[in-house]
Image (cartoon, rainbow, N blue to C red; front, side, top):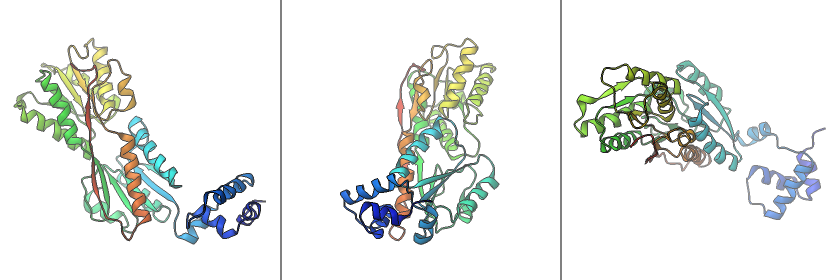
Length: 330
């Protein structure tokens, strides 16, 4: 038979209401008493009934995450940051991954309504009126990498354009003129902003006649294919800026397979600074995004909105980036 809150209270020598306060965080309980309650709960293998707590408190202590992907180092680092904050606050996470399928995002949002206290959404598809229509305004929501500045939803964005500008400017300062861009997935905010930053740097330095852009999809294989496409051109670039590190690593693999020395013949720069970038050969010059901080901040913002719905003020935040110079370009 499962132990109840009554047995925990009896073993700890406190009232049932005190045990309730410890697990629900509804009022202050001094540390010695809290320790006794937690020890009794551990010895009795007691865990509070989350469903019952949700019914009595009208909360689930769960945050829903809807992401275009949940695999790879980029998402792994972002999720680590989110999970750390959620765990510290005694919140669970419910994750739904959907990439390039509008109906999947719609289903995910509908499925989570009523089951989560807040939402964090990174969607390359849903924008503007469609996004406002799908998300109930009574669910605190944070949008990641979105150009939508809805008055009811916080946004947390990476300074993509500035980062791309820094990367391309660095290559230009090194003497490169024919700098190719491997773009990210079509119709995503990150890809659009990073492309804009690339073009801005090219224009500012009077290099429009050397501009070269090829398509990618933020995957290592697409970077590999894009580099092979660039090598097939009559005039090869002397440098490649890939819109994320995965594509940059894929591009370097293709270059090395074709006997192209990196960086002596073609230099390569990425974006994001995923952990693997510092272990590649050569080590990848890139634009560093503190991905764990990105995830942490997004979770902090949604928890602020969940806890203080009446006083919460919407914020639109930009996460800064920096150039990290390694050995893939000189």
